[in-house]
Each structure stands twice: as C-alpha cells, then as structure tokens.
Amino acid sequence: MSRITIELLPGRTIEQKRVAAREACAALAEFCKVPLDQTYVRFDEVAFEDFGLNQELMSVVAEREGKPIFGLQEAPRITVHYLEGPTLDDCRVLVKRLAENVCTALGLSAQGQNNMFLLEMKPWDLSVGGRLGK
Image (cartoon, rainbow, N blue to C red):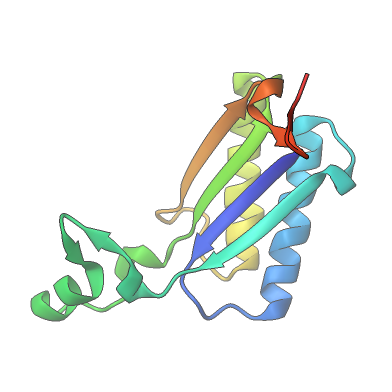
C-alpha cells in the first residue's frame, strides 16, 4: 500500500482536489510500480491558526508583524509513504512530477515553497488487520 498525504490550507474546490488526487495517484502508481487501486491520497485541510512555529501560532505572528496571513505558508506539505524499492532517480522524478502536477492542480506554484517528505518503509513497517507485512 502506498499513500500520499497532502496538508494544505482550506479553500480548494472539489474539482481541484479531484484533479490533484488523480495526478498524485498516477504518479505514485508509476513510482511504486503498483496498480492504481493500491494507491491512496488524503487531503488534510488545516486552518492557518492551527500552525505554530517557535512556540507561537503563525496567525498571531502574522498579525503582530503586519504580514499577510498566507504568505509562503500557502504551499502544501506532501508526505509520501511507500515500500522500499524505488531508486534515488525514481524519487527525483516523483518529486518533480508531484510539484508540477499536484501543485498546479491545486492552483499553487510548482516552484513555491512546497515541502515533500518521502518515507520509505520496509514490508514489516506496515500492519494490516493486526498482522505485520512479510
């Protein structure tokens, strides 16, 4: 099982998410060499006041410093969980494809401050039905 979680601020339409999900799953299926029905995507919409840095809420800092609430924080954070196997070059291709296609689908700049975390798992790092993988 491979999955992508996309954390972002609220405000995207269902159609934007639909296109982003399609692009993310297609990229992940190709990257992991698995069928599309073994790829998952989840959107976590987090309000700006729910982000903190250095013991302060970002919304409080923005208000105090007179900065716009969104600023660079509008960029999504994309986390990819996948089973071991892909090479470093495969990872580079995946990151580029996600940045270009998913960010564009969400109406964001592919060259923006999007953050991605690629988390490779061993088969026994995944449990299904209370049983570890092979």
